[in-house]
Amino acid sequence: MKDAEEKGQKRILVLCVDRDGDLETKAGVKTPVIGREENLNAAVALALKDPEEPDANAMFEAVRIYDRLKNENKTEEVVEMATLSGSEHGGISADRKIVAELNALLGTFSPSETVLVTDGYSDEMVFPLIQSRIPVSSVRRIVVKHSDSIEESAALFWKYIKMITEDSRYSRPLLGVPGVLFLTLGIMALLGLVQYFLVFLVIFFSGILLVKGFGVDRRAKDFYKWVQEYSPPPLRVQISNFSAVVGALCVVLGVYLGVTTAAAEIRMQQDLAGWLSIFPQIAGFFIYGSITLIIVGVCVTLLGRAIRWYMEHDAKLLRNVALIGIVAWSQQIFISTADLLVGVVGPERLIGSILVGILVGVALLIIIFFVHRSARGFFEETAEQVEEFGED
Image (cartoon, rainbow, N blue to C red):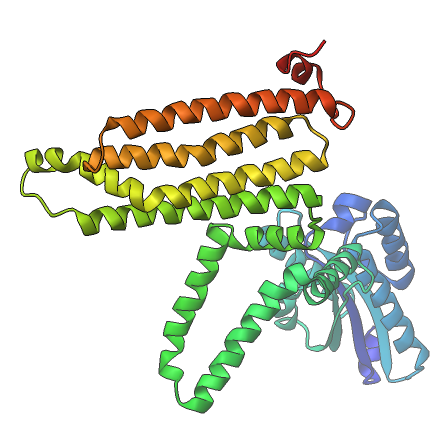
């Protein structure tokens, strides 16, 4: 060593630092490790104990740098390599152990410059400790290129990026909504309305909250799906439903006309007694204005059902026809009742209308009975319907 100093040769130390002491705790190798073969054997031992240990890769890199410097065959350079180890506890104890091993190393080899090889930022924390004692000409930090965790994280990251850009469930809220906001901001800037953008944001997000909170989007989606998959019912059902709707409209309109007629014919009263005294007249005028449309609405509904049961060969058709006739005649009974309430005629007309209505109902029942017997083959009867008509 003294001969090298006398000849003016450079003394280069390739130094690897293991601050967390993995070399000693895992591989059981005492440090400092000096020499190429010793470092190579120590790196192999550490790699066999823990193939995922980055300190082993740092030691292999130190060996590679040592070999490259030796192969340059520069007579003015003397190359040596060594590995120092700290403590698994880290902190001050690890730094003090590294300093102690470095001082012992300098007692055997006094380098003029050092190439520092580390495996991460934690080992580079010892850089000031090394540089205060040896000039550091280069620092080589080793990062493992193929790490499962890194590859999995990268794959997962790109998977999410692809999902956000290609899946409409995620691209709409994460890309579409910001795109709409930026586009609106740009348009408002061109129109000189940027000061209203905050108001637009409030309205925009409040609308989203209302739609999501009350499930409007789900209901709209369900309705759209129902429209796409909707299959109209049979014609007989459509006729029955349509007649029911038309009948309901006629009843509602009849009630409205009844109210307006009574309001037009009756004078306002000041007290409850006055209203009670004219209540029969109110009922009579209401019947005058409403009964025609109400009877028409009920008959239209019953007629739609009769058409349906005729197409289905259902014996309920006969009963429904009788009901239509009775409802139609009931208009005369209601009109007679209104005449009596208003005071136009006496009760004789009402009694006559009721008796005629009873006769009409009996006649219709007799006709239905004979029609049912003569057209028995037309109807698809159930046991209840046979019993209802008294057939054996």
